[in-house]
Length: 266
Length: 226
Image 1: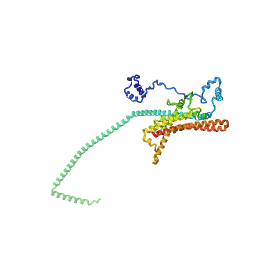
Image 2 (image 1 turned 45 degrees about the vertical axis):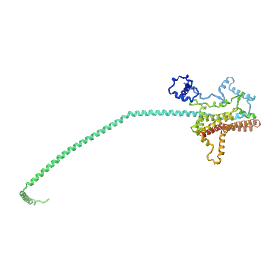
Image 3 (image 1 turned 90 degrees about the horizontal axis):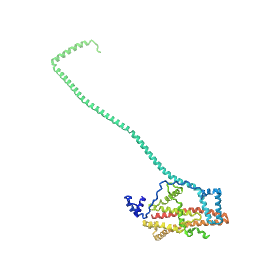
Image 4 (image 1 turned 180 degrees about the vertical axis):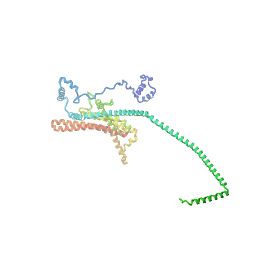
């Protein structure tokens, strides 16, 4: 966005620089807005950006002795003067400077001794721990990013697993439908049987009614017939016949009574 | 001896060309800017330090005040590094010059005060009268508060200059005493040398503390006026 803004500023300042047809349509609004802000016509990012990754930094600095003089100097003098060469050179130079008063011993010297002494002591004592602290800071940063990455990976993995389990579940879904189908079939069957029974009961009810009506008629007719017969028989017995019958019954009973006297009563 | 005592405070020139600008720009060399995600130790430590200072310093400000973060952080880093580098032998400390400190103090103080007067005129004027003063004292108190307001930049500049200059002078003097005493009696010289060592430790602390105090006070002035 910034480069577009700057290019627009450059374009408005020197229109021959860029072909306006190349630029997009929503451009002039930003150009007008930013021309007030960006008065200088500087074009940033003219060079090619580095496409390849930057070369890695060396992990450790070059080796030094006394914190000042690189090891290469000692190696350089080794063929000619051996191991003690650079030390002798150093001592000689220092003594030369002191004796010729090129370096004057002044109050500054003692200040220098105390300051440099303190610095050397401090660095020797706490240097390694400070370095470790800096390394720990970097490590924390990397660990944080790594954790984010791992969390993201884990999240995606969990999503994949859940997806797989869901797919497996979908395979087994037909059991559900089978059970439901069976249930429905059973319910239908039960309903059918129930209704069938009800129909049977109703029909039987009606037939029973007819039968009981018939029975009742039959009974009524019988009773009526018996009553009619009795009535007529009773009517037919005249008074005189009744007397004769009663006299005969009494005579029979007397006869029987004479016969019965002989046997003991049980 | 007299000339040599203040020799370290002369603005350095090489054959008449003042190189004080170069000396003022020197501490920026030890502050690399982070280029990658994971940097070298120096850059990581600097990042951590800047974050620490930033959190501590800018937590009290509101959004408007936090626009000054870059200014204040660069201020504290500049003063701190300049003071610390000035402790090395035969080095020149720009913060010993009243001119430079006045330049820093007056600009920053004036910016904060004028900002306060522009945006919160009533509140800024109200600072001139503390709450709960008895009525007869009001005129005098307003005058005193005005004086105290205008003395702030002077105090900032002079405080820094005086502290650093005094420290350097004291180290020079005690170093001189040690030098002279070495030929007379080494025992006393060693005592003086121990004093010098302790003083150097103090100077390291003072260098950092002064930077902190300067920045803190500017931040305070800003807080009053945002």
